[in-house]
Length: 212
Image 1: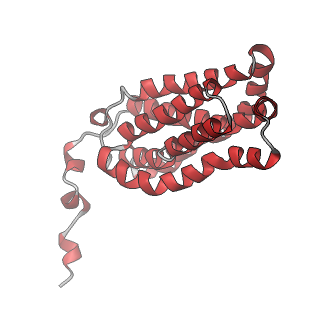
Image 2: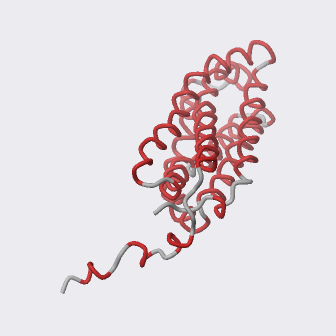
């Protein structure tokens, strides 16, 4: 006998039948938060390169160590991805996103306040760990809110933030650097990321019902 015919997806996840569909307002709010997180996160990945010549001068960083510093966030980011999945399944995407963005925002804000190559390296490693929550949280949030026929469009909108962040990061960081100094590149970008995190923390999963 084919037992699969006796089991439907709603039997496996009864909660899907108890939650009403997400409203258009909730969907728009979620996409704006996810798109904003994408934009800031990808921009912060790039801004260190704008101030790298100044850091090299201040801390006498040789080219080989500067290469390690610039790529260090990617190492921890890659490692964090394997940990992020189980944690997001356990605590949910919005709590996980708030914690992850708090880590990468704090490491960005603190970077100008530390001194020396090792401290700079640790800040970028912490940044990469925080970034590990971004893509899994975004994918999980979209799949839990949007019905299948709307998910591709939602992914396209949210991930547009990547390209916007990369497009504005270098010129924006250069303008801030020229006007207020290299430290403010991290204060402004890190502060804006903190603002997005605080907004996202008010969006609970109870307001983000699943779509069948």
